[in-house]
Length: 285
Length: 318
Image 1 (cartoon, rainbow over the protein chains, first blue to last red):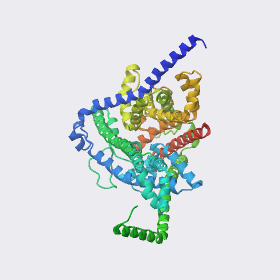
Image 2: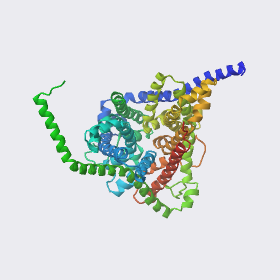
Image 3: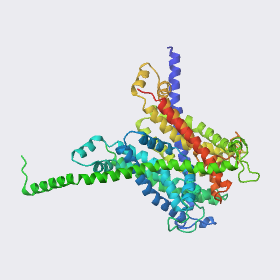
């Protein structure tokens, strides 16, 4: 090996470090620009009036009140349904299911569902809940659609959490005479719960940010009241933002940015909670 | 060594009695265990029913659609104008829009995602890695509506300063931003694949005098190739199914074109456009949603199955 060759290889090596670092910075820089743009566009419009007003044709009077309540309603119904179904499925697959065609089918099916585009879930909601069950274009239809959408995320996260509970903890419980369910309830769930909760919160933040499925299910863009029952019409934060973004006037674009700031604050708070929980309860057995 | 006081002995006896009565009620417990087991199975079945529901709903309305439109013209007509007269139902125009966006997004996400993964897995110090990974996770958690806003208000004006002829709605802006959106996915899945490559392979290469670059490109990437490729494939599937960015930034002009500076329409954007309006249940416009949705579903399903197959088939065993 000649020295010249070695020098060249070393130069390539040093250059590659810089190139790879620059490539990595693309994502970081993109995030920086995105946040900077949204803050500089929207911060001026973000005040208490914006949070406590309904949508309006006039930019200076427009607000996100109905969207905020719509998002709360959706999450309030989606969360318990997805939580129970998700943990139930994960517990069945990890603790009860024997290897066989049914287990295999359920597992493969969950993996595939996780890859189905969210808008297809919207079509499912439209065909099944809006038209099939005749729930109409209501909060209930939207929330059920969202629950099915985030279900695979919760199942996969819960499965991993349950799997990481070591077998000797279960055996200890059985040795004390506990039944299977007592072991699951008293040992497995408490041990896995922080990780399950982390996955659950991340799934919820996905549901809060989703737009497309709810447009298909029939969320309305202009709602000037606070929904009072699951069978009311509704709008949510991302859809309100979408409707402002697609208006030609610059003022509405700025208002959209203000709405995005609110949305991102909600999501970052949720994500921070998830990270905090993960760090606080992370156990090594 | 230990002597139990009277109080402790009593408590112990009580506990033992309680244990005994637990054994007596064991049959009772078993019955309840079966109830719980049944409930958990029911939960697990819901996800299967979801898939069945998707297929049934899509199939039912799609059959209705193809009673009015021939499959042949659906697949070969080059125009897509279901909302105008004369109506044309050629999926190719929407499909080409989706493919154009996906190609553009891949050009951003695949190289940069792979390089990010190599940097994080091979070059970065643990500290840097622990800073950058959460930032990329944040990028992955940003709602697509926010990306759509970003495409329309920042990336499009930027492109128009370079190419003044570009339309307000164009495929380029949308694909760049879709690329940024799927970049964290490529980076994180590829990094997982590379981290899984055993240390000993790297050490062997270093022992032969290889540089870091050579170890990364000639040992680690080939060894983790199945995981890397499946991350690429999954990211493409995500790009095809992405909706809000393309709805906001790419426009609503279905056409067969490869020019990224023009306005196009994707399958997903069409579904949003039609369902956003007041569509009548049972009309042909209503049914187009399902026909396009079916196409999208089958396409992404096929891609996802291929990705899973690649991971299984080409998994390297060490």
